[in-house]
Image (cartoon, rainbow, N blue to C red; front, top):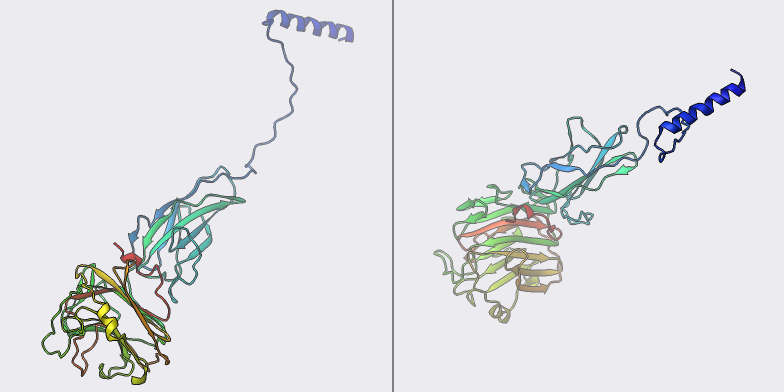
Length: 387
C-alpha cells in the first residue's frame, strides 16, 4: 500500500477506537519484551525455627547417649541442602562448659552439619556418654545457603541415673536400687529416697582406685534423729555420718582416719556436730575443741535431708546445710601440716565398728547423691534427682 494511503488508514482506525471508548479512559500503548524463562529462585531462603520432637518435657532417659530430633523445616527456596545444628548444655543459657562437668562425662555438646532426613524428622545421636543423673537442655537451628534460622525452643531431658567409680572421681546416686560400693550389714533401698542403713553397725564401703589427696566427700542424709541413746554393744555415742581411712585395718586406730559425726545422748554434749581427722599420725590429728562442740548443738529433723560436705587439702573442713542448696548450719575447719595420702584410700557411708567401740551410724539414716572427687562436685551432677 502507498505510504500516504497507509497513514490515512491508521488515522481512521484510531479515530474509530476513540469514538467507541469511554472518553475519560485514554488508550495507552505499551511496548513489551519477551518474558524471561522461569527457574529456581536464587534469593535468600526464609527459614522458620525447628520444632523439637524428642526428647522433651524433662523426660527421664535410660541412656547416656540420647538421639535428639526435630521436625523438618519448610523453606521458601527450592534448591540447596538444609543442614541442622544441635546444642546440649546443663544450663538454659547454653553458656560454655567451664570445668563444671565431671572429668569423664561432658555436659556441653555442639553438633553441626547434620543433613536433613527425608523422613520428615532430622536428628543425631550423641556419640559419647553424657554426664549421668543430670538435667540437660537442648536446642537446634537450620541453615540453607547463607540463611540461618532462629534457635528452636529449648527442650529438656534427664540422663540415665547411674553411678561410677574411677580414678579421682566417684558418684553414687543410690536412688536407682544399686550402688557402686559394698553394702555391709542390714541395708535397704528406699524408692526415690536412697539407701537406708538399718542397724548401728551397717555401712557402705567404697574402695577407691586411687587415693584422693585433696578433694570433697559429700552426700544428702535423711533420718538424723536427735537424742539417740547408746546402742547395745557400743561403749560411746559418736555415730559417724561418713568416714575415710587407709585399707581395712582397725578404724579406731587408723592413722588416716577422717570422720564426720552427729553425736547422740552422752555425746559430750548431746546432739553436737563434730569431726576428727588423722593425716598420717597422732601428731597430725585435728578436731574442734570442747568449746566449739558445745556451741554446735543441733536438733536435726529426721524428716529432712541434710547436705554434708567434707573437704580436705592442707587441713579439713566440714560443712552441713539444711538441704541441698539450703542455709548453712555448720562450718568448721582446721589446718594441718601434712598431706592426706593413705596408701589404700577407703571411704564409708557411716563407718565400720572399731576397737574403740564407738557407734558407727544412726540406724534408719538414708543416703543419696554421694560424691567423692579430687575437686568440688559439679553443680549439675545429680540434678536429675531433684524433685
